Length: 267
Image 1 (cartoon, helix red, strand yellow):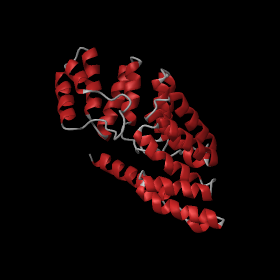
Image 2 (tube, rainbow, N blue to C red):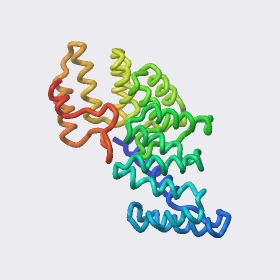
Image 3 (cartoon, one colour):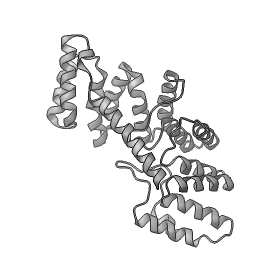
Image 4 (cartoon, rainbow, N blue to C red):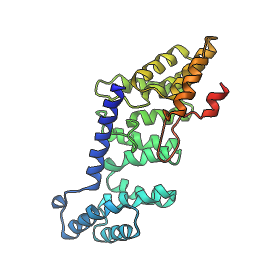
C-alpha cells in the first residue's frame, strides 16, 4: 500500500504539473500583439472548458493567432468528451500539425482510449519516439501508463503479443521508468494469453506487491485452476475486491483487460 501511495502521489504531481503547463502559457514569451492577446484569452477561458462562451472566445483567439496550437487543443477537448470524435479530430489534427512535439502523445493516447484505433495510436507514439529518441515520452492523459506501455497495449490488442511483451519488458528494465499502476498486470495477462503461466504468475505477484485489485487476483486464480490447484480462495478474494471497488477504473472508458464480476463468478 505504501508503494501504491508513493506511486499515486508521484503520478498525480505529474498530471497536475502537466495540466498547469498546458493550461497556462507565459504570454510575454509570445511575439506579436495579436498573439499575446490570443494567449491571454486562452489562459483565461481554458478554465471554463466546454462552455459556449469559452468556445466562442477560443474562436476569437484563433482568428487573432491561427498558429497558436494550444487553442485548437483546448477547443478540441469538449468535443472528445461529448463523443463528437469527427470535430475533435479536425481540431486535434491541426494542433498536432502546428506542434507535434506537444500534442502527438495526447492524440495517440486518445486514439487508443476513445476510438480503439490501435494502429493510429501506435503511429502517433512512434512518431513521438522519433522526436524524443532518448526515451521518456510522457504519460497517458489519465496518468495510468507511460506511453511506451500504452503502445505495447495497442500491439497486444492487435494480436502481436510477443512484441507487446518485448516493449513492456524493455520499459520496465529502465532505471528511470516509474512503474505504472497496471504495468505488471498487463504484462502478466499478455504472458497468460500465450500460455506462459510461470511468467504470467511472476508478474501477477509483482503486481500484487505494487497494487493489488480484483482483475489481478482473478488471473492468479485462473492460473491456479489451470494447474489443478485450489483456486476458490483466490476467486472469493477477487469477488470481495471487486465489491470493495478495487478494480481497474477509468472515468470515460473501459481499461484494456478489465474484468467484470460475472467473469469472476463463472470461474
